Length: 319
Ligand code: MN
Ligand code: MN
Image (cartoon, rainbow, N blue to C red; front, side, top):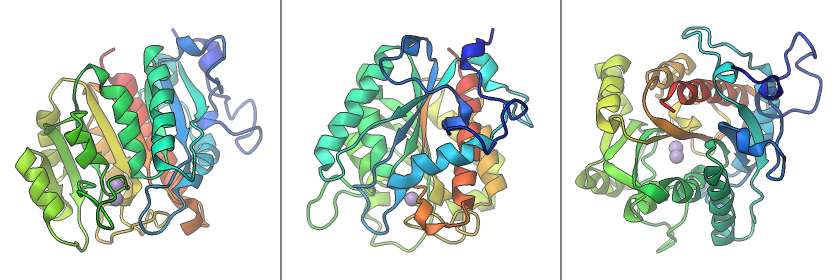
C-alpha cells in the first residue's frame, strides 16, 4: 500500500515549476524527522567534487538534479513500475561535506550513510564526483563485499595521481577493492573508452577478476548480450550500481568534467539500466553531473531521468 505521506507532489495539484524543489517532488525528511525510519529508499545529495582532477563543478549536481527531477512523473513508461507506490521514498537531504578536506568529507559521508543503513533505508545517491562512491561503499559493505554494475567511460581503477595521491575520482574502485568493499569477480564495468594515460588500470582490474567491457565491445555485441553478461557476473547477491553520466556521449551529456566522445545515446543509457530489473540492487548512485558545463540544463535532465530508471530498478529488487 502506498502511504499518502510518501507520495510526490503531483503536477496536477501544483505546477512542476512551482514549489521548493526536492528530488522528484518527494517529501524532504532531515535525519531528525519523526518518520525518517519509515523510508525504504532514500534519495541523498552529496554536493562534493574535491576528488576531481580536471574540470570541477559536480558539487552543483544535487541542486540541479533536484530542480530537473521535478519533471519526473510517477509511472515508468515501459515497465509500468510505479516506484512511489511500491516503496516509501523520500529526499533525505544533502550530506554536508568539508570542501577543504577530503578525508574529513569522506568521514562525514560514511557516517551519514551508516545512520541511513542502520534505519534500514536503501540509499540512492546523487553526486558529486565519482570519489563519492568510496565513502558510500564503506557504509554499505559492512556485512561483506558487494558486486557492482558500473557504467562509465573510465574504469576509475587507477592506483594514484600526482605521485601518490590515493583519493581522487579516478581511484575510488581501486580503493574499494583493496578495502574489501567490492568483490572484483562480481564487478562489471561497461562503456570504457577514451585516450589513456597507460593501461595500468585495465591490466590491474582484469588481473583482479573485474569484467571490463569497452564501448567498442558493447556496440559490437549489442546491449542485450552485454547486459545478460552483467546479470551473470553480479548474480543474485547484493549489488551496487554506479552510473557516471560520462558513460553517455557528450552530445547528450556535455555537462560533465571528463567527457569522452563515441559513447551511447540517452536511449541506450535507459536501456542498460532497465536491464538490471530484478537484480538485488541494494543501492545506486548518479555521479559527475557538472551543471556549469551545460547551461542548457540538458545533462541534469538526463541525470534526473536516469535517476528515475535507477529508482525503478531498486523498487523492483527483492526486499
Ligand atoms: Mn567515473
Ligand atoms: Mn567517467
